[in-house]
Image (cartoon, rainbow, N blue to C red; front, side, top):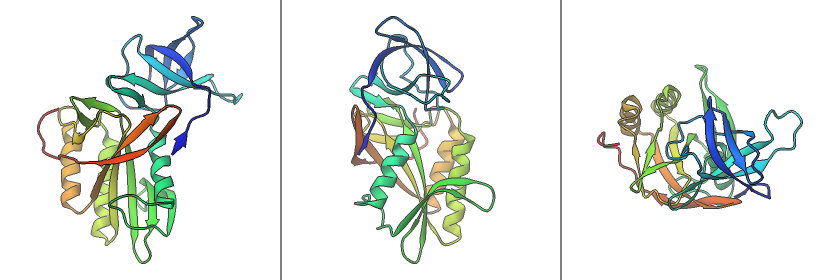
Length: 237
């Protein structure tokens, strides 16, 4: 379980500038720029007037006084913070474990690879290593959680690195965390990034395990909820 600092501050979305800045309107009518902890397209989360929840940032080194954490979706709040899934997955792997994942003896984050790449985690399973990459999913259409919401050469590289590690005799997992309540199955967003969709299917065929979890989003708290199915057919979306 992850709990964001309170109080959460209500706001309404106005516009986004570049990847990491958005202008919002607060209840008092002021219109500050806030940090966006998500470099993706945030499809479905950028409608003018959309209700948001922010956290205040007290650090004097910050250029913005607030961070955008949640957006109002059709079925409840959406957590847009891409670092939140990593924290939830790490908490689970260090503690009670994840369904479909072996018990972990030790977990190390931000793993540098010999070729210069980097993955989110490496887990010591006692005799074998398991490499893990975690992706945040915020885009859902008609119950289908879609990833990515923009072209991601970095995401494709992660899949290639995971597949290479499997060929070297290690274990590998690509974990997707759907940060909203209305996703019931995950599919690659073929129309947005066909290269990623193909790479995901190839990685799975090569032995990269895929796990998809849905979050329970109840601001200020979020937590991992149920395991979801995935469909890698290169059609639709």
